[in-house]
Length: 109
Image 1 (cartoon, rainbow, N blue to C red):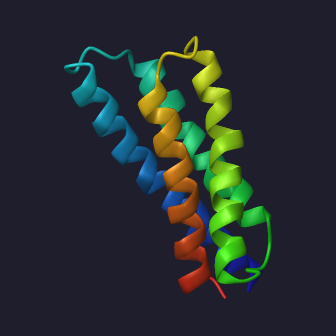
Image 2 (image 1 turned 180 degrees about the horizontal axis):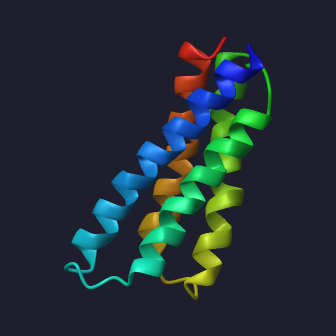
């Protein structure tokens, strides 16, 4: 059961990371450096890993709160590395944390 949740969370984080890469590329008019885009994708992958490690689902309201909290904490690391300039990616990370938790809640247990 824990294995299934972990796979779902990591896969969700990786897929959402691709969406972040696409969004960041569009916002920068395809001028972003490859290492910046990789760091953004990797941040989402780590988010999936951490949410997967959080364990079993609690209840619907707590799942949303935990996803938002993990999204905020993990995205803050990337946000601070940009000199606090990439607000869109930071806010998207909070939403993506909720999405990853929702997918794990629905399909993980």
